[in-house]
Image (tube, rainbow, N blue to C red; front, side):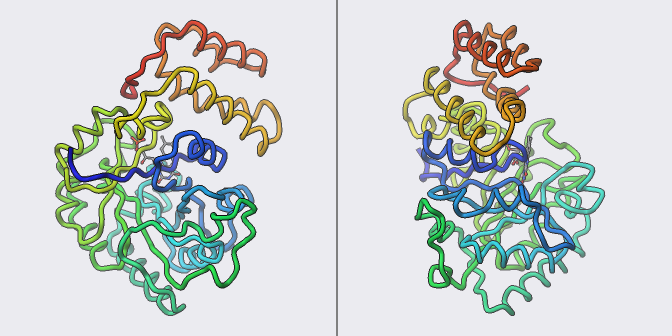
Length: 357
Ligand SMILES: Cc1cc2nc3c(=O)[nH]c(=O)nc-3n(C[C@H](O)[C@H](O)[C@H](O)COP(=O)(O)O)c2cc1C
């Protein structure tokens, strides 16, 4: 086939926190980097405890992780980058894609894309401020020590010596907020600054997750980009991946979110490996359940986390609708576990997976 491609795991707020990343990485190696759900940088210059916990080196030991920041203020972003760099991270990602009204109305996430002058000023100020600190901004997207502390399981090995004076700033963007014609202006802005990677979720902000990705606009953005580009959007099956790669053989990185929730072995399968086995999925969900138990207090809270995952993992089963509904409706852990048993006992496992509907 084409050149080798690297796979990145997309951030999904509420789902791909560190217990997910650890469990997935252990059982299904092959993801080049996991991007964290966004941490909101605001005027307090302090992240919430829950956000900090997700990026603490000890919670990400051995897992290649990139923190993602949501803000439209240069001082807040720079502060966050320095904080992440101190924790040992060598790449920090800026969220320019969140389509939720709460963020869009504050001109954050995809909302920031609509004000290109402000976005341009934001990057200008960020880069200047970061360079003023003596940091060198690296423009390629190679993966090295992510973060410095991750080589040690204890997570406490990082010292001043391990932390370099370099940082990569990557962005995760959509093709525009309202209209795909915004894409050209956005690429001009990105091209002006030392950005290490442009991850493009090929939808407009107003699309949220509906409709199909706009591959034509993606192709145009990729052709215009002076930076490495990663494609993101609706890669659910090996066939989707192969179709995409046949159309865009030059794209070196693919980011996958919901496809990996639906089929945690998707990357292995795309590389020609064994397709996901029913018992393997079961073992994975059990491990994830345990991982959540060790960090979330209360059985019910753990159950709610698992329910979110089942929205995606349930797509692998045919003839299990009754049990999947029971999972959705479960009000006790016992009811949840009985329903999960039912899915595995009676559901017919489809190896290929399916598109989200
Ligand atoms: C529930 C949910 C939460 C998400 N949270 C984030 C987030 O925190 N940061 C972000 O950049 N994108 C977020 N996304 C978008 C995904 O990272 C990804 O861009 C999108 O799902 C398209 O990729 P996919 O088709 O491979 O899932 C979220 C998507 C969903 C469905």
